[in-house]
Image 1: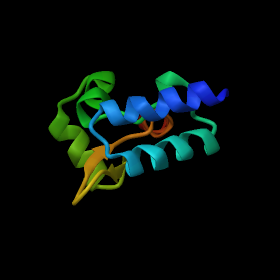
Image 2 (image 1 turned 180 degrees about the vertical axis):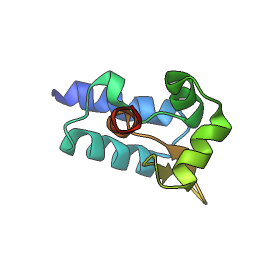
Image 3 (image 1 turned 90 degrees about the horizontal axis):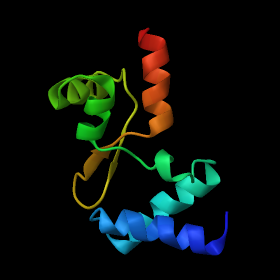
Length: 95
């Protein structure tokens, strides 16, 4: 991954509303975790729900119950994000 691609990934996180510190941490995690492809950016609850064909409330419940791995990003309580790899793992385990 080139330096320009890393900068673009970080700016993408910032455009989603993350502060610069959180965007940098998310970028670092994506690069170190080998998930720096554009389609591997963390998903919102709504995006995960659309991919699963369920409601956002169902995704919140899955996260709360620990059946779907998620993390919080941003200030305060943060917003829930789901890594595409975790969503894929859930789909395989649920099948």
